[in-house]
Amino acid sequence: MRIVLMGPPGSGKGTQAKRLADRYGMKHLSSGDIFRAEKSSGSELGKALAKYMDAGQLVPDDVVVEIMAKAITAVDSKQGLLLDGFPRTVAQAKALDETLAKARSPLDGVAEITADDSAIVRRIVGRRSCPQCNKVYHTEFMPPRKDMQCDACGAKLVQRADDTEPVVERRLAAYHQQTEPVMGYYRGRGGLPVLTIDGNQDVKDVTADLTGALESLGNV
Ligand code: AP5
Image (cartoon, rainbow, N blue to C red; front, top):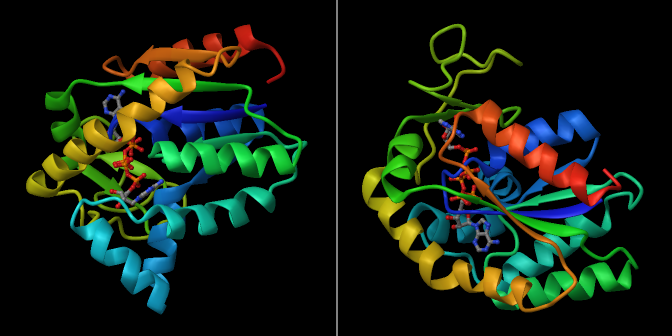
């Protein structure tokens, strides 16, 4: 099964994608994680990505599509795919359709996780992430067992450079202006299931709603 997880920054896409990937053995591809790994490598591409990411702006479509098409094509089509953070513009959604059509493995559905702007800011400002295994924590809602240390791999947790209140406001504005139209694109396609999940609930309740909705589509 190939699913796109949509939703504003901090709605819980990454948290839920990891839980779904563990449960169903699907490949989780997060554009944000891929770009942050490139940033940490210190490459010229990573430096170019950082300028947009640290300012809370979207990376240009041509750069995003090239990186993500390569990553998607490398996934075994039998494994199943969870896309998190891509596509984020209508042009990216069209490019994704082309990539999947070439691989004869079209999307099975889109799941949008909704969350209120006030909850989002609180979640993002308290987020701490593992730079090694990408596991995500929250100082209040999901603290690690040992202070600032990843439960899974023991690395020191970090706060993302774009997880400050002013940058979150810009990321939210980019979401409303550039990414919300992608939902209209998918809803207008006909025949493609588009699911809406209430992301304001506890993590486990969001997972229960998501798994119920995906299992109702079959093929997971
Ligand atoms: P990206 O990394 O994709 O960031 P994002 O979409 O802004 O999403 P987040 O990672 O902030 O949030 P999330 O929804 O995954 O929430 P999480 O599960 O972590 O992108 C970063 C940047 O890269 C972009 O700004 C852009 O510059 C660039 N970029 C990436 N893709 C691009 C593209 N396609 N085109 C152009 N540019 C692109 O949860 C957040 C926090 O809340 C965590 O602390 C978590 O523990 C907590 N939490 C989660 N769920 C709950 C819950 N139900 N209750 C309480 N707390 C919760």
